[in-house]
Length: 520
Image (cartoon, rainbow, N blue to C red; front, top):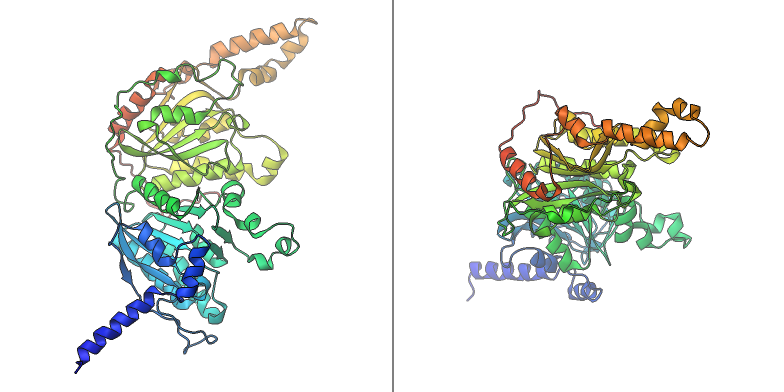
């Protein structure tokens, strides 16, 4: 005769078996047939094998309390818990599209909020896998209440623990806002979509002017909206990206980033940089070539590569230490700073500062992009965000000027006057209010105009040469202490690593305040 305990054990096994089936075998297979993984498939691919500990597996939709009738399902459409990635503890959740379309009801949202709160208390990174159709209409206002709690928890975690969002299906409404609160948002190329308003309610989609992918697909968010920091080729690639990003980040804001051993010598010279800057000051070159020559093993993980391409940001390592790299890109808009570039770099700088990642700035900037569109769009306010982010950052700040550093853009790009720790320049660098040609045209316009006919250009060129001799080399700034040194390009890696070693113990005290008022 079966005992009471035996019956309860059998009931537990039956319940756990039901959990693994989500919304039913037919729905799970339909999801797999589209090339997407199920919620549990994805958790298994993200985490080290056998490391997942599930939480709140038996949470269900509260049909008896409020809202329209909806068949309850254990887990309520989201799988949550913790495990390890490359041996590091992380908290995670994965929305289950097979249960109510992955929609976020009250208990669904509260379940995620609980995991977010646990991650903050444990001071461990959080990875969210998003694949759901927004807030559950059946729950009414209760769904919004639960989602509000989730949003509050995520905001409280911001800057305290690293948060990653992997968007591997359509995510609509406030869920899209929640996904974008993460420090890094990665979209799957084929299925990842983010919409604040449902495509069904968007007039351009209804009229056929644009399809769902054109409204909120991965390529759109990687190139135009700037929401996606990276686009994953498939789900395996998305999980590899998550692991890679976490390898540069600490577990929490009071910890130091991991140090990774490298066979790349710290004293390696970079002679390939000797001739990388063209003699013609208006000729472009690729700043990523400079970055890859300097960093460990030539490995640079660029973020937002298709958005605001006139500035380059990403992670690398110097002497095994994680660094955040910001560089002007001379081959796009001559490296000028515009609205999108300023915002892109400012957010990344603040992310690095929050997680104790030193900043390396590689500078070649002729100024802020002029024009009516930029001025009307608020380039003053957006450019100030970049300046504010650099000035506010307390991590080690290193700057290498390769060619131009003009005007307000020079000041905004981690100059010595904003308490940058180590600033050096190549002999090809020029730090000035503006280029020699523009300066001469303003300062000596009357003298040029008064020159004899046919001699004006010769006078102009003579004055340009005089201006360059007086202001157009880095030694002027070095004599005033605004550069710590003028170095040979081949010494770039060596010098930056030495400075980083010295600055590893940097601590900066600031007067107490609630927070600064960045010009958002």
